[in-house]
Length: 137
Ligand SMILES: C[S@@+](CC[C@H](N)C(=O)[O-])C[C@H]1O[C@@H](n2cnc3c(N)ncnc32)[C@H](O)[C@@H]1O
Image (cartoon, protein in one colour):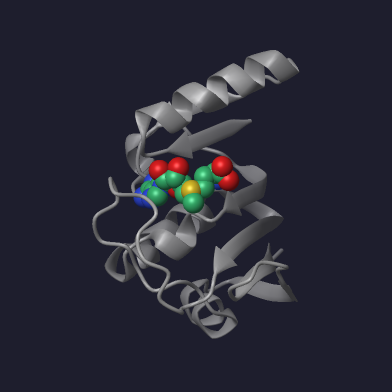
């Protein structure tokens, strides 16, 4: 199992949590839109994105999708939680180009070779979604 984050502190916190839970996770400090620069060749059966993609600048999203597609086993799942496109401000000052949220239509267009199986609204006070995508077999 591997996990990626752009921010050192997030990786450090994840390491502490993984150790406390006894979970064997390879924690990588890097850019999820540049997976070729990381030691995460895959293939993977499952990807989990909790509110990362929806903050990635639009011009880097094709690279994100390509990176996952390249590493996905046939039939792999991508479970994603994301904020909708409404303006939310920037909760992560280190990520200076806060982007436009995510919609079902954008995921369908962006993730060629994947099927959007399910969209479940979140329970937040602003529009959020839980997405399930499946890589073609
Ligand atoms: C809203 S936070 C969610 C953090 C974590 N998933 C959680 O629920 O506690 C979004 C995370 O995505 C990371 N992130 C944003 N852009 C990224 C990128 N291009 N590559 C890797 N991580 C990124 C941020 O550093 C931040 O830790």
